Every structure is written in C-alpha cells, then in structure tokens.
Image (tube, rainbow, N blue to C red; front, top):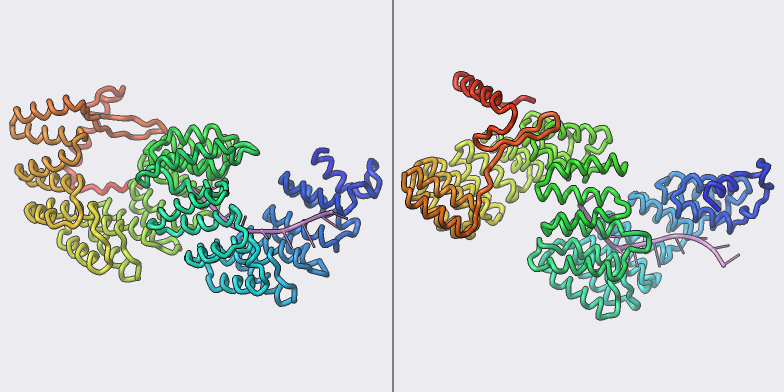
Length: 629
DNA sequence: CTAGGGTTAG
C-alpha cells in the first residue's frame, strides 16, 4: 500500500464514504506501524495525519503511541510537537521521558535535554540504561566533565555501567572531555565489548589531537581485529581522516581502507554510503589524488552537502579554482543542495586566488541572506578574500564593524591584509593591539606581521617583534619565519647580517630562506652573495627549473656567457623546462591569460596602447592608491 | 504482541 493511501486512510475518520469509521488501521498496533513508516519514509505529513487519527479515536493516553509520536516528531526536527505530546500525557513513564530527552539531544538542544533529565529525576522517575546513555552523550556534547562524572556515578549506582551501550557512551563522553585515561579504564572494565566499544576508544584517540598517540591508535585497530571484531563503517570513517599522504607513510592505509570498504560492502545496503565516500574524497584530496577523489564522487548515487564540500575543498587545495567554483554552482543548480557555512568557507579562497571580488561579494551576500554570517571561520575567510581581492576597505569593515568573537586567525588575517596593502605601520599597531587585548600570536601571526614589516621597511620593529615572540610565547622559529627575517635584513641592505642569521638559525635553511637572500642580493647588486645563495638553492632543489633560469639570467647580466651555456646544458641533461609565467584577468566571466610579450589576443594592440598610456599617466601622477572598491 | 540508547564527515 502506498503512503498516500495510508495517509488518506489514517485521516479519513468517519466522514469518508470509502472507509467506515473504524478501519483495520485503527488498532494501536497499526497506528504504531504508520508512525514507523512516517519516519522511514521521511513523511512528516503522515506523522501528523496519524497523530490526528490518534486524537480522533481517543488514544492520546496510549504510552506506546505517545512515545513513538515524540520520537517521530523529533526526527523531523519538530521538537515543539514532541513537547506538546509529552506535556499532554498524564502518566509519564521512563520511555516517554527518554524519547523526549533524546529528541532534544538529537536536535542539538543539549542544555534543554539536561534540564529535562533533572526534571525527570525530580518527578521520581528512575533513569534507566537508555536515559543514562543519552545523558552521558549530552555531557560529552557540551564538554562538561562535571556533568559527565555525575552521570557516570549514577550509572555505577544503578549498575548501568555494565550495559555495553551505556559504557560506550560514557567512554565517548570522557574522550570528548579530554580524559583519555578514563576512556581507557572504562574500556578495560566492559564485560561484553562490541564494535561500538572499540570505536568509542578509537574515536578518543583519533580526536585527541595528540599525534604521538597515532601509533597506539593503529595498534588498537590491530587488537580489535585480533579480538575477532570486524571494522565497520564507523571505524573506517574515523581512520580515513588520519590516512593519506599528509602523514608520511600512511598513504597505503588510505588505499587499503578504500579496498576494505569495497571488499566488505560497507554501506552498500542502500547504495553507496555518503559519509564514507565523503571521507574517501577528502583522503584522496589530501594525498594529491583529486582525480581519484573525483572518481569516487562521480560514482556516488546521491551526494549531500558534505560530499560536495569535500570535493570543492579538494579542487581549492589543488589550485583548480575554476572547477571549484563550477562545482559550487552545480551543487545548487543540479542537486538543489544549499551550501552551508563550511561550503562557503571552502569556496571563498577560490575567489581570493582568482581575485574574483564579485563572486566573493555574492557569497558574502548569500551568507547574510541565509543568516549564516555568525561564524568566526566565515568572517575570517571574508577578511582574507576581501584583502586578496584588493579591497582593504571591505576587509576593515568586516574586522571592525562586525560583532564576532575574534580568534588568532581573525587578527592574523587582518594583519596580513594590512601587510598585503603595504600598510606596515597599521599591521604592527594591530599586532600590538592583539597582544594587548590578550590574544596569543601563533606562527601564522608572526609571519604576517614580519612580512608586513618587511615590505614596509620596518626592520627594527620587525626584529624586535621576532625576538620578543621567540622568547615570550615559546614559538619555535620555522623556516618560513626565518625567511622573513632574512628578507627583512636583505632588503635593507644588511646582507652580511642576513647571512650571519642564516648560519645561527636553529632550523635547516630551506629554499625560501636562500630565495630571500637572493632577493636582497639582487636588490643591492651583491653578486657574490647571489652566487653563494644560488649554489645552496640549487643544491636543495636540483629539479626546480626556475632556479637555473634565474641564475642563468644573473650570469647573463654580467655577460658571463660560458656560465650561461653551462647552466643551459645542465638543464637540458636533466630535461628541465620552465613553464613561462603568466597573468590573467576575468572579464564578464571569461578569463583571459597573458604571458611575456604576448601578442596572441585579438585586442593585443589595443591593450599595449592602453598600457603605454597608463605608464605615462602614472609617471606624471605620483603615488596612486589602488582602491577601486 | 506494541515504545526509548552509544560510536562517524566537509
């Protein structure tokens, strides 16, 4: 029987001329089944019709029907409906309480759920295994260890800790509160473990953020199998984010896990599993295998916002921004899926890199319309996008005129914005303000403020910030931070001091450090220093053609043609070719690309003429402020 | 005979 017909029967009552007033559907058992069908078929309509029928035949006080109604309404996010049914029950038993508490918890209303739990205890209904499992999950969600301990002690009193599900829930609560030791202790004490127990333990290790536990974690996975337990979809979805190229040597785990999913048919019961596929896409993206991720994506039977966002993220990270933006459109147009906060944060960097201010503004507008603009991550992404798209003013507007709790990233983004626009003094003063109001700078902040100093020639300010941060905040200088210092000294002509700094650095000088020294040497015409730096750079990156070309240009400028020829020969032997650099501009949605002395574009002549005009105008006009928006 | 629970993402 189809759902439509069921709904008609459920609501027909005595008025229908096709059905008599009491149909076979009017038994409590049938009504219960209808409510069951309403949830499996995602039909709030059927739930409501059945509810109406329950009222009209006077079954409102039936405990089974009431409980099922409460949980059905909650499953649709219609918690007010659940509450209403609950309130009207004269005799509230444990099951009824449990389903309402769980309904609130499932809809993220954790504090209300806990209030209900207190109310339940006050009205002398004893919590059972089901209650305690739910409430300990609530404690984990709000990360309140005291509440969690309270629930734990109640579980010990009632003997519920012996229940596997309660113990699993408590384990996961302790994991979320950062008490991995307690998770472990509970695990050891569980009389009958199931896969969920192992998964709760693995989740604790995986989400602890402590990478030194990774080896232990893979050991646990091994033990789980030795113990005769099969890894299930939950297990795999926790392991996939830890796999992939990012963590050296773990790439094979990623592929192995993919094989495991296919071999064991995980989630294949009703098509492919969206969650697992999203994790796979993410894993392949992080392993620089976006195309493989795309294969997974294309094979999916249905995609949700997680899957789309994972795919978009993959393309953004890879630098294929056009594809990222086009997927962002497809998600809405083809699948009718609305982006959420995370999708917006993922796609904004694509606008930044394409300097697509209009696209960025559209996304900002979308966030405002959908009332999603209450998220630090989104604000931070907007600050970054606006500053990279050339609008320092819009970035400032977000930073100064929006009400949101600023984190280290917000400050760093705005400091970066000033640096990017050549406003070193503003960057330093904002940095001081950041420290003054109590935010802790991190590596990224430091790189931002140092490179701002660098570009604005604020050498002393930069050096004093560097020294104070290293001593006060215990930030270990990275190669990137050191490159900033070298850049700063080099630009100001203190090349010997820069070299001295490189010699005393605590980290191994990487390509960026030598590159910075080359930069300074070129600016101040120090040829010996350039050659020294290049020799280190080429040693570090023997396969990077840019280095050979730059060095060859250096030799050419001092007319040492033999050295030039030698370098060209080495490049040829190594089969190295430099891809020519290019610039591009988007006009009316079409991107036009230009390389050096490019005459291929139909409007090339016009373009060069305009360029000449601009250059002569600029020469006469003095400094120009490039703030168009 | 019929109700209520835990572990997973971008």
